[in-house]
Image 1: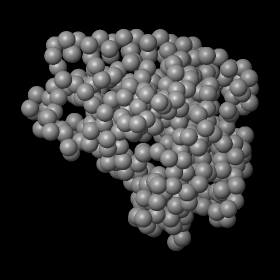
Image 2 (image 1 turned 90 degrees about the horizontal axis):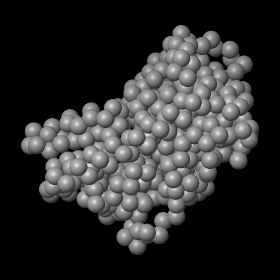
Image 3 (image 1 turned 60 degrees about the vertical axis):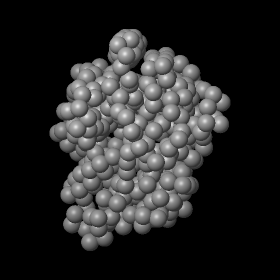
Image 4 (image 1 turned 90 degrees about the vertical axis):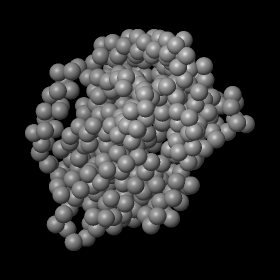
Length: 402
């Protein structure tokens, strides 16, 4: 294969998580044991330093029909509101008419925040049933994959283009980036929210590696992609959402906005951390293997003590964790989940049954928290259980046992 950013063929193995099912394919009882598995491995580009998957599950498999909805947690909805307010304050608050396009807009949670701020909103979402949720909620949404052709069909230029947790998903990466440049007003701003590889390494958050996430950007590597298509990042900051996400503000290269001081600091910190060097990822792979051993030792020790353990949350990344570590029903009785679309389903690969949170009749001794990125919200919402002696174990960011 060639590097997704620079087309180089100089790719070096960095981390192998084995054969895994598509992590967002929660299974019906009839599908259990019949799900296909695909390689889940990272490679490092010696030319541009980008870390990426070496295998692509077709976008039609991953994004045409899925069960993820972004409005499930209050933490994420609040983050989206804060982001929208900040974008409006910095770039559009003085405009009488302002518009925003959201790529991979899901159920419209992010666009609802922009709509409240007076924006004209438009979403593009590949999953028809999720797009329908947004349209039913009054958020105009086109059910298509976003690329250069889709951008042309929209026939509109936007003040703001937003991509929350989707810019590293794109199989048609260069076509989509061309579409963004085409649809962005001359003085417009493209807001990218992406999992930051420096944070993934620091937090040992290997579960954020799954088939939907094709690329794992640093500021250096995302800038290489943007520059190829006449765009550039001029400001940004690190948000705590999802354990460490970069919010990067991008504009046309010819606009010549100077880089902000806070972005310069982040770039310098990235260089000091050697976030673009192969040795960093080789050490990361060693730490991931050690984490697997430690996690299994914890779970198996708790089971020997007679403890009942449930998984808390069934995020997509949790399936990477479960499948890589080999955590199955002998460790976790079930996964407790809020998302009603996953009622009665089973986790891919390890086949752990999902139970809707409000329908849990008897709590376990330990909740193994796969949705670790919402730790504060989980602990706040479940203080009554902690007071009753139920423990919550967070395996990532940082490891904690409450």
